[in-house]
Image 1 (spheres, rainbow, N blue to C red):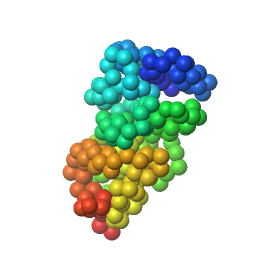
Image 2: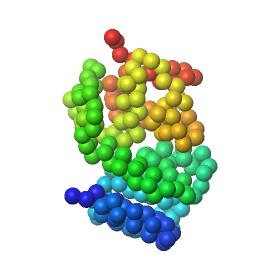
Image 3: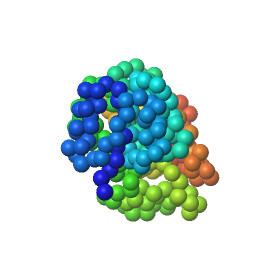
Image 4: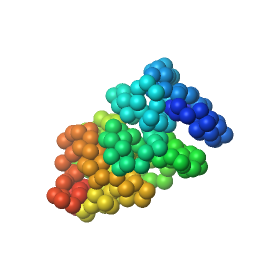
Length: 226
């Protein structure tokens, strides 16, 4: 069954280009040119990923993102013509998984889409099986995270963040290292985005949040006894 993408973009030529690339790659595409229609479509239809422009008529992209995040962890890629770091920080704070600044390469957009869908849908990838740390369990084949034997919902970025800390367990990871590894070399935003995601991740991990230690003025560490 084809993945379904919701493209929210008010510029007709830009939307036409994006839609054409997704259709070429075999996606089923839903379109909206304003925030109100985007919310209506999201409520009515099953959507696997959202491509969301910031500056759209009606309800702004930020508000659409916030609305979606109130009920869903569906991957969101935010498009914007702006390059200010505060915009990127706001997007990540609201739960955006990827951030693409116009102009951009459609091939890059497709690659980021495929990566996010693999994480969100739990497609099998090379991994090490089940990782257990007390009441915390991670299935690296299905990207499933359990706390006290209960599955918790993590966004792609939250999962990547958790896995990066685990891969470097008992070693301090600076905020700069986390940004480079989880958000990518092309993200030059404020370190606060790391703190925001750590806070969200800890709230979902409940009692297992104790494994993520804050190293004051440096970063974070996933600490377990060897």
